[in-house]
Length: 494
Image 1 (cartoon, rainbow, N blue to C red):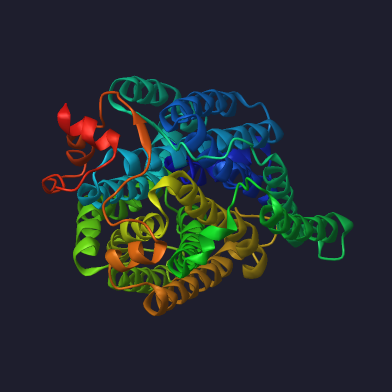
Image 2: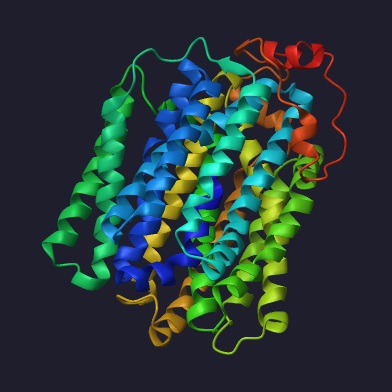
């Protein structure tokens, strides 16, 4: 639900704009309100899960997300829709880091990378399938169904969670919540996003642009200072003592900023400039979904064997090539010759990138910090997407309208080339900074190669079959001989 909602709304933006008479700034906020609260609170979500129980917070997040989705679907105007989208992001901030930390604490180390590969692959598939789902719902009914569909899905998720997910927690998690850090993070990200979004229509000299930008920068500086002084920081700066953890998050920022631009602009360009229907625009992205479904778990297994450096270099380079190709899609574009080849290359590149990127971020931190590490990496990814959607319309010259083909066409080409550049930068950073094996990454983090320090409450374990049958991955490796954590041991005993 959380990852689909990151992209599903993009396909419905033209219809939402027509329904509410919203301009470019209003439509950007429909996307950014969700990403803003998700990015701002995802670190707090990881901390809460480590302290109070990851399964518990995951289920609270699912319920919150479903209620917010219902409010989105019932919104009578653009202001209420933006507010409800912000509430959705809070729910996503509770369930996203918890889901990954649950896998980290529930699988033995030898099986963990495959589980993370499945998680990453399905997350990537969710983001890629969003435009298709949105296009179909918009065309057969209404854009409101894009949000209503989350309610029955949430009910299924809760039933599965109650039956199959074990509870786990970190006994060393902080007992004091870093509310100051959370507030400063929100202020910083909101100020920057608001100022950048309003810049094209008002100009830099306008007080409603320069003021929020200044407040946003000051808020982020104050956030870093507060985290350095806090006894229980939401973002422990000590995590970044690991060179690999710092490097992989820089790569994450570059890659996910580019991907946010792709999924925002491509589906709009296909409708407004190329003349595709909402359903056709959504279906156009299916090759990306299918390739990630088939290849992501295998890419995770490949990275386990050869190390993450090569996949994290080759993947973004392939994605950059795909964006150069897709930047040529304009009026009267033919799908088979102009769109399909580029999206095929993009699907292969994403499959190589997503699983090793996530696995490396977690391997670079100690297991007891699984919630924090996943929260930081997800926060970096969402912040990158947030800033990309705010900055790209500004630097590409799209103006105040995303539904005018005359201004959108050249802005789209510029945006795709900028995103390709970001991906190439990410590939170079990965080549230079990422170690050649996960063993080296684990050793650098100071974590034991096979020990897990989390405690887990005995409940029915996560079923590997549930995860892997969904993606057609090869069988799991036999369980490790070394002692694993209690959740993994419980899973094998059952």
